[in-house]
Image (cartoon, rainbow, N blue to C red; front, side):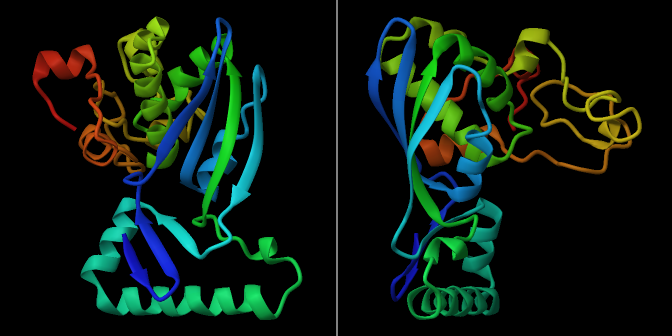
Length: 232
């Protein structure tokens, strides 16, 4: 965490938290804390078998930055200075010049929200959102939720794995993922070998080491990682 006056900036998923509210035979209700607005925006697109509510953006100027951007704050004094100056100006505008402060919520501002989701819906969502080719916030939420459910005694949560683990190959970096001419440009995350020889985008949004270091949980490796002893 880096703080300057009232402005607080958190690093990646280091301060992300999930509280399990209730578990029954068919669903789980949980609360996501200290995620950036951009994560809420991505997560709340789910529609079938899930309900999002109690969404609240921090009234205080608290922000959650991508890890690589946060690292720039620690290594580049000029960038750090300009960042805090900009956020302080934004906060002044929110307080004195507009009547609806939420109109000036940056996508990095911290927020909390509640989710109630059926397990039938969660299974499919986990297959997609546990993939490390997704960005660190949405991936972090789902690996942390998986860990919390396992510790709460939900046996089926042990079977929640990235979809590529079920298939046994990388299904992200492929010629037909987005379009025949575009999807093949995306490099896989390394959990499974990919065939995109000339991929130039996405050198992996998330890594096992980042998740484990910041969430303080153990990430289950794929069969390929275990057999080749590769660490990402």
